[in-house]
Image (cartoon, rainbow, N blue to C red; front, side, top):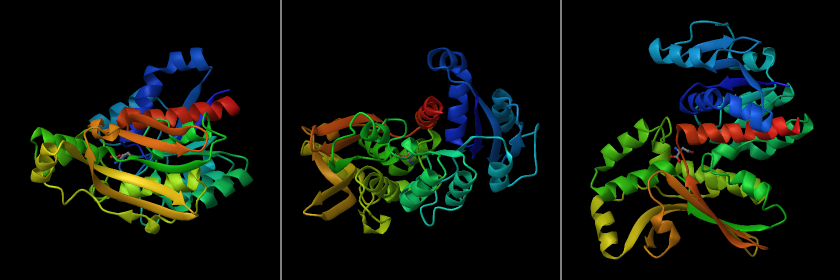
Amino acid sequence: MKQKIALIGFGTVAQGLCEILINKKNELAKKYNYRYEIVAVSDLRFGVVYNPEGLNLKRLLKEVKEKGKFIKDRIDWNPVEMIEKSNSDVVCELAYTNLKDGQPAIKHCETAFKNKKHVVTSNKGPAALAYRRLKRLADKNGVRFMIEGTVLSGTPVINLANGPLAGNTIKAFKGILNGTTNYILTRMEDGMSYEDALKEAQELGYAEADPTNDVQGYDARAKVTILANVLMNVKLDINQVKCKGITKITREDILEAKKKNARWKLIGSIEIKKDKIKAYVKPELVPMTHPLAGVMGSVNALTITTDLMGDVTIVGKGAGKIETGFSILTDLLAIAKNS
Ligand code: HSE
């Protein structure tokens, strides 16, 4: 059976997903018996399109690149109507992250669940601000709420902890959780200015629509909140996570650290000791001998402290068009496997 997908948002992540789906169509069918159609897409800039038999993805990509809008298959729906009226069985929420109140993405997730549609998202708003409530709603309606792409893009953190590591109690997390800031710190060490490095990170598709969220540590704070609620089953509010970004770090600080054989890294951490939660995001001076010091560019790393396996560390790309596109694919495949 073909999976029918509706996309909310047609920015970097959605376009990355479409490129993968086009390039790997035959491989996915052959290897995993995975067949799909994107039936509906809604984007604030490009418009809304629908074809119950499946949209032509190459054409959609071409239209937005050349004309800056969708041309064929247009329909006069808002995103909520698209979720309710399209024949999709999975909704991918790939619009911009709003960490203030999570809207309109939370509304999109609720509408999908009430209409018995699965949600796959890389949007950190719903996962950081309303995970527990949304998961209950998904469970009640017999559908899945999949969020691999919200932490470390396609590097499998959520699915690793819920899958192969299931049975462990997770006691702590610590790592580099934001690609943009790690990229900026790396490029500043190469000699680039903060402004140019940020511009490059934006061009490469790493940064949030509003990069303040990256450089002030808010994006990493959202990820710490997600890890606590989703994988540690700890009720942690985003405002309980102490947060400091990298905006005060100068090139001089970076060179000074180098002389001391160390590197500045934006670290996100959460641990539970005697039922007390300690969660923070802040720049830390990491000695070169520490494994996190060698994690450079848009690569992220996360150490998961477990009771049965001790420390398990995963290192991989934390941001990017194809990497986050892949995070969506991995959840789509998991849903198809269980359908
Ligand atoms: N802006 C985010 C980052 C994207 O740089 O890590 C991935 O969540």
